[in-house]
Length: 214
Image (tube, helix red, strand yellow):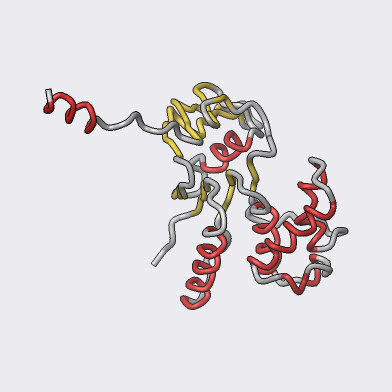
């Protein structure tokens, strides 16, 4: 009897449901001359809560098509893309897209760009101002809150876009790696900075990038 009880106690628990899941995902598109191109073919994988996943592949292998499906911008040809077990049917406030280009609104200040999403869903001014300032501090841009995007360097604009995407715990999808830094020191600094921001909250990340040449 004791052995039976021990066996039941040691039985592993059921695996947690993934936050993001693809099931036999197929995405096709038609070219201007009528040819059908298969971007992804029966793709299946899971992203667990708080997990950071990197999709590595050359140009034209389907990375962007996959991210567009996860963002809800494109419907799959067949198969499923699931968020918390439910099919993704369109964009939503539970996901954020960090584009390869910063995609900041030039007529808004740095703070205004970070606050915009919260403003659109009705977050009170005092709350969104505090959240925006917190995330600008996290990316070391608290002193640039009132600046316009054109006053920032390219790297600083990317950090504003990161703060906008990280303004609240969420799943970040459609995050594309920017051009590889030329200096090893720059690459190390960027990596440490991203890791520091990531430690504050734990959304799920899907990052895509091209393979680096030696």
